[in-house]
Amino acid sequence: MSGKRIVDRSGSVLIFRLLVAFLASVPLLVLVINIAGQSLGPDPGQEVTELLGIAAFQLLIVTLCMTPLKRWTGWAGWIRVRRMLGLFAFFYAVLHVLAFLQFILGWSDLWATFTKRPYIVAGALSFLMLIPLALTSTKGMMKRLGKSWKPLHKLVYLIAIVAWIHFIWQARSDIGEMVAYGLVIVGLLALRWKWGGARGVIPFARG
Ligand code: HEM
Image 1 (cartoon, rainbow, N blue to C red):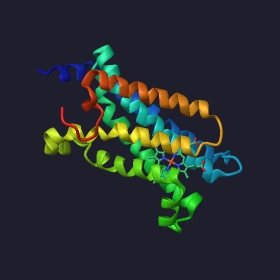
Image 2 (tube, rainbow, N blue to C red; image 1 turned 60 degrees about the vertical axis):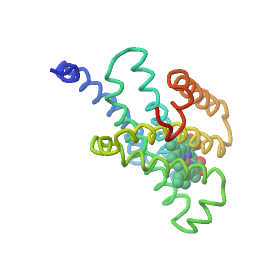
Image 3 (tube, rainbow, N blue to C red; image 1 turned 60 degrees about the horizontal axis):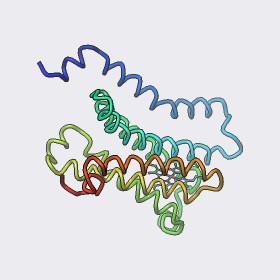
Image 4 (tube, rainbow, N blue to C red; image 1 turned 180 degrees about the horizontal axis):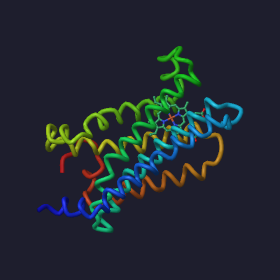
């Protein structure tokens, strides 16, 4: 019997997965509660867009933490929730973009808006790069892509950097929070570099 099965049978990974799924759903619950209670402040559309953007960004960073946590603790459970966390990040990113289109932009002048403001260009770039990762996150696609899967998924480091640029570029205040996120991303990149050399963080690099 494989070690994987043994972990599943103990139930610890299943409980952990449920806990992580619940925690990753908290931003959505907060949003629904705030909408129901009409407590979103003077500009609800902007509030919704911001809440979803920060949820996508934070979950992306949490996803990147899973491999280091597995290496440090030796517990496979971290890796078993990695894909789910990445998909939650993508889910919030999709909602963030839809909220932007619906509440801020109003679905008009799409091309002009997306190309005029540099921070929007950065957001759109990170979103576009997230799409192939979400589409290839299934076990079937992993199998089909074989050795190309890992090099493709190294895009996640570039996505985190570009999403961070998007975040800091539109900031009006509290730069400290953005700097903290930047330091976490740099730390995660440094770890991957240490463990796998430069190839460990360069998108599409093999090895
Ligand atoms: C087409 C793609 C995207 C567009 C058009 C877009 C648009 C925006 C806009 C307009 C804001 C500012 C809202 C405001 O305060 O007025 C924003 C904020 C933000 N976005 Fe995006 N975004 C995109 C993709 C992403 C992605 C992929 C991520 C993360 C993975 C992300 C993370 C954030 C974060 C963290 C904020 C700051 C929220 C805050 O101030 O608390 N965005 N985005």
